[in-house]
Amino acid sequence: MRGPWRELFMSKVEAAVRWDRWDFLALVVGVFNVIWVFAIKLRTFYNLGYSSDLFMSVQLARSWLEGRGFLNDNCFGKTLATHTYFLLVPLGLIAKPFGAPSLLLALAVSVGVAYFWGVRILRLLGVAGPVAVIAAGALLALPISVAFYEERFFGFHVELLTPALCLLLFYFLLQRRMIPSIAMALAVISVKEDAPIAAAMVAIVAGVETWISSADKHSRLNLPALIVVLLSVFAVPVLMAISWLQPQTEYARPSPDPRAVFLVFAANVSQWPGSTIVRLWLWVVIVGSFGMILLRPYYLIPGVLTTLVAWLRDDLVPRSLGVPTTTLAWLRNDLLWAPRFYPTETLLWCVTLVGFASVVRTMRSGGRTAGATALTVTTGVATISLFAQLALVPKTRYLVRSDSGYSRLERRQADSLFERYRREGKPEEPVVASPMLFRYAHDRNLFWLNRMYGRPAPIWVLSDGSSNYGYDDIHVENDMLVDRNGRCMLRLEDYTLIDRRGRFMLFRKKD
Image 1 (cartoon, rainbow, N blue to C red):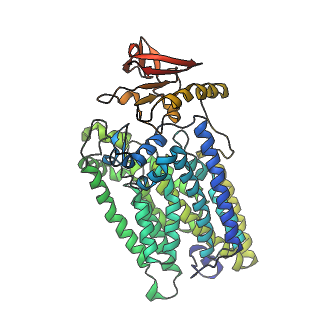
Image 2: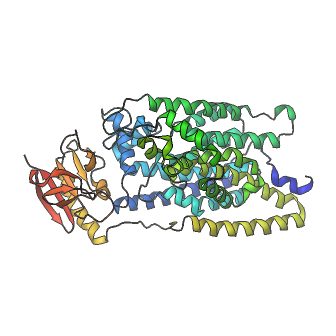
Image 3: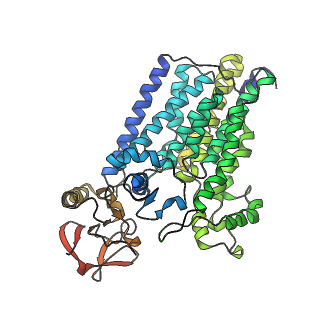
């Protein structure tokens, strides 16, 4: 392929990009993104819109600072037996004094970092400053990106920090900087046992782009990218072995039997390329990259690996294989759920950035006809992609408002009632709460009502008082304090009703 159209299928990596006023503007916009996202997250947190994983993450991050062991929580116990969330360990330094808001701030900062380094990568690929500032903002504002970072109901997963780390890795790999690349690869790998897939995807894209763009045949090999790929391949079995070697505890989610997982994979691998997950993934990659993947279609081949965990689901596993129920539960997940989508989200960022840079370069140097054609096609594909993304994630939210199952009056009632618990309760006293009320006790000795067997009886009970809101809400039924599924865990006669506001109730264990 000759002429200006050749520019569409290759990158031009600059040796260095000096800091100028556009980088300063990108920094300002990045800080604004941090403030905007944090405002949304914090408002949702105080409006009782988050539950479950955000608060487990707080306990996991803080456990080593509170003498409760390494990556332990009061729900599942030794989480390292299931997931290698090593990145949460340093986050404990901020989660210990500031609780859940600190993790929400870390997520907001990662959004700002992703934007700023998106701009820097575009500039490294030859895109002018003003165009890079706008393009990176558009990429961050895509419905898929917003829905990914929003993570409704849960609010936070450590996996949400991965795209920002991967963009830093991508930047250093394009510059072939060995030490920073290895450092960032290790940071990515520390996120989780399947995070090496994301690191490998970034290294593959960087390696291919620098290979194609290199004028000197003798310097085409991107050695840092090759090392990151090898490091990622090596890291997967190491991280999984760490989980498999952990002793099982009463409530720990058992890590999947490696033999069973291999059996599932081997028996069904031929169905993988034609599975519903892969077909959905192909559509997501096409529309999520504004069609830029069509300029680099070879990335689809290694990119299929990002669907592996989502593909290994309950409905894909024949019962005749005799796979244990615990393994099936571990395997079941959805492609677009953030903890499973983050490798694909990372690939989308990388492919879109290199593809967009190629389009801009073609429009700039390819003459009037080539530029007009590229602009027309790009605009049409972008429009289709935008509407397709809105269909994939129809509830994308951009404004500073939050979802909550409680009315404003109910939130005021809850605040006034459970402020008494905050005032009279001691941090070390065991407490259980309805899941949407975790905020009031998340930085204390919070337990889950359905996981109290063999654990100290809670001193305090924060009840939603309703059996039909959310999940596992604590309410009174037949002289028992039970959850929504009717599991009787606490006898009402052992507790005193301290106070009540509307539907909310505060109980304390009798002496």
